[in-house]
Length: 401
Ligand code: PMT
Image 1 (cartoon, rainbow, N blue to C red):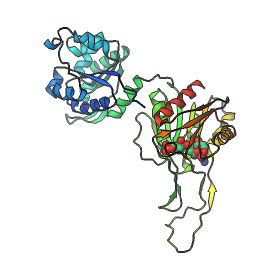
Image 2 (image 1 turned 45 degrees about the horizontal axis):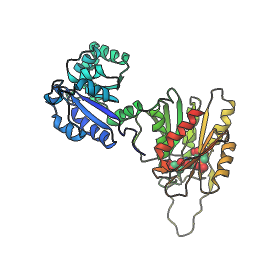
Image 3 (image 1 turned 180 degrees about the vertical axis):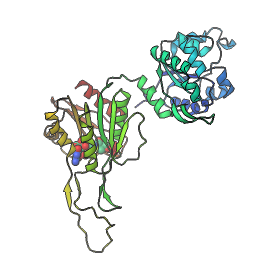
Image 4 (image 1 turned 90 degrees about the horizontal axis):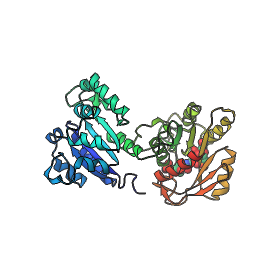
């Protein structure tokens, strides 16, 4: 799947803050995602890093002045303003924020913003005292009134040695906001509960029964729902995936813990998707000492775990608040019959059947091939897609419901 940012024209405004060095990697990431990046630097910014660095990284010349002899016919502030899909100003100093709030156009970057119809995204970055000053607060409030996206700075140790708000946010959060600005916010204000990953059912202090779920499908669902504006809670079994910015994640190990957390969050959720591979069984006895090796065979008596999805299907019958309930089915054979049975039996609105026998779909791979069954009899077979694209298609169906 080509990146959402492919061919998107991002004008990257850079101003005079020591945090400039972090944006070098940001530009590399955007270019890797096939975005077309053009950098505009304020005069102060050129005191920290030369334009040469950003020209090399972006693959485009860097613009620093309204009156560069190279641009006589270009009228840079107008043309750069017109072609941009998104203007990202990071780091954004108090000075540039003040200029933008007062509609000044005394340098190339502020003139471009004033002349542009593009989405504007600002990352305020400065000493905490400056950030907390009423003038800066007032200017940022004005920018929000203009409809600009202001990404709150992080708190922590600043270059000036002080602690507090004003640090440039980490890339994953800004990257998520950039993707969001190109994504229809059709899940805005929806509260969504998602489960992901395997569960670990302990045998003794060091051993457990697990499965091959990596959590990728559930995490893709959470990331894409959050990008589409939803308020996402992710109940995750043990996985090796980076935490998702802007997604509330609750880590669990066993099916019982997952059961507990899901029931805790269930009433607030408008939509529930259960992508976790929950163990159907657990050892009847969890030994409190490591089971010693022995030559004779050892048997393990297994007892059933709560079927969380089934229980939600029951609970929804007495719930006032509307709900969209979506399950997954990991089937190895007679997918459709099994899927239709589960859809009915568990009282679902949608069921995603993934073929777990194919090497490129289901557990632990980056792609999936699913068939979507819906309560109204709809049946949609999706081609092999990335798990992110699969998630987007599932949300498209959910939005229709
Ligand atoms: O995590 P990945 O590596 O990306 O792999 C993705 C996946 C294959 C795990 C995922 O796409 C998937 O199919 N998840 C469901 C796996 C599973 O448990 O399928 P099932 O047919 O056994 O369960 C059916 C449904 O009931 C699932 O929604 C499951 O979350 C739910 N369930 C199952 C057992 C149980 N005790 N409680 C449940 O809620």
